[in-house]
Image 1 (cartoon, one colour):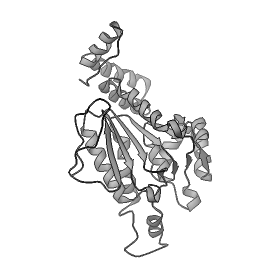
Image 2: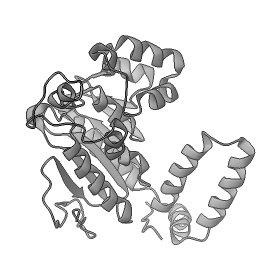
Image 3: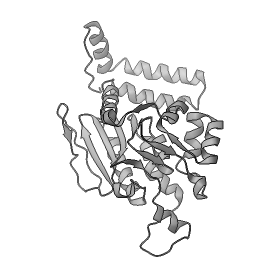
Amino acid sequence: MAARLAMGSGCGRTEEPRSRRMYEHIRVERTDDVVTLVLNRPETRNSMTPAMGEELASAVEEIRKDTSVRVVVLRGSGKAFSSGGDLSMLARDTGLVSGSEAPTMAGSPREFYERFLSIARLPQPTIAAINGHAIGAGACLALGCDLRVAVSTAKIGFTFTRLGIHPGMGATYFLPRLVGTSTACDLLFSGRILTAEEALRLGLVNRVAPPESFDEAVSSWAREIASSAPLAVRLVKRAIYRGAQHSLEEMLDFESLQQSWTFTTNDAREGLQAMLEKREARFRGN
């Protein structure tokens, strides 16, 4: 059974979720209504394995069911976000090495992708805090989040073709949608490495922060989003991604339905009352 997230929290207090199991390859941390998932293999620059993916998917499922969680942050432990697929795993899967000691994707690549990209299906807003280099599948994992902030020293690259393999982990889905077809071709054909500033110019990341203020930049952004009405934010997230596949007329119908429903919530009444009283709203998610 996956770790059970603590439902209650004190003001500004960091909590470890109450667990029925201990995670080995990730950490789950909580501060108020923000949960941080930490890729926790710093000795390999948080390289990605099936075991890590299983733990991440398990934690994501618990978060999905916890309506008290308003924002989810994904980051790496140590100096890297993620170096991508574990090299010993890739060596075994390409037949370069053999033997039971080497890890393997333990199934088709699709199954490997699904475990990690479970984060893309969360109803809560997600932020990839790119605290260091994000390479290959690690960079794609960051693209699976709604928002991205990178430390100014980070390097980001989709280096699949440099290894002689086809991109995976949603690279050919996420990149054209974020940066356009031509730029996606450039990045995936060449496998070149980007600086954080170039990633910002291209639209791969939303923000860049220097190392000395990176953690506060992530925390401040998460708190800002968490302070908005959580029911409305979840519906907005659903609508934005739905809008990419539907016409304007269909989205106007969808927005009308969702907005009418939010008019009936306590959050809407609190938001308008707070505006009239010239104070910050205190949304409770109902």
